[in-house]
Length: 305
Picture 1 (tube, rainbow, N blue to C red):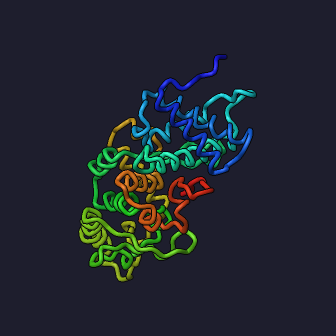
Picture 2: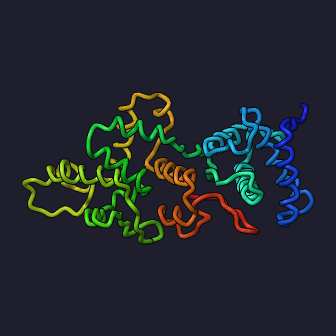
Picture 3: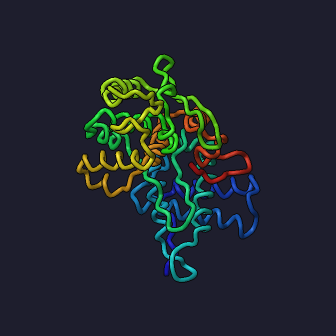
């Protein structure tokens, strides 16, 4: 089998620059450094075959598609597909490559690189802005719009949405309070005017009606008709219902979860040049390196949301 080579001169130059970068940063010498170069070479060839010949054209969409390619790519040394640790290594190297591109000003901003934990895991889907708009357009209740606004507009995890109380949604300060996030971390999330509009409408026109005639005080923000707190499972099913209402086969087959909406807002913030520190605080991560694959001078860890 003939070995594939890079056809685009600009891509070959990027690979040559990356080779020098790896040596200067002293990632690994000898055979180790060639593994880094091979991983980037394969990515660049895959980009060419996908019709992309300019590195600035790469977005999070290509990253997700590339992970899908890696998961299904045949192993060239044995039967079957690539080992989980090999897929993780490829993503690790792509993070280093991305930082090299930033340092050399070949790109102006980061693009999303998905995480992978193995066990035949599918990459989490990142929706486009247009797909998010489609979901909103097909909501059939104030509750559905409110769920989207908290999951996507505020980037909350499913457990954080379930635990949300009325007192946590502070319209006057335009802040949503997550009192017990992952790692027992408290954070304040800014709400956009549109998010505030959707949440106010839900509280006034839908949530209030469920409490009419009830004697007990219910603290939960999202409640059933019997005024009890909604479970995370039900919130997830509500999103599935919204997706089904679109009757859009491409959206339906994506297997979108509430966590996908969290990934999507992180990606969109990055695409709009939001800083790492803002995204870190917004998502409630203790370290910037859990917000995206990013680089420090001698380390590039894999992102985990």
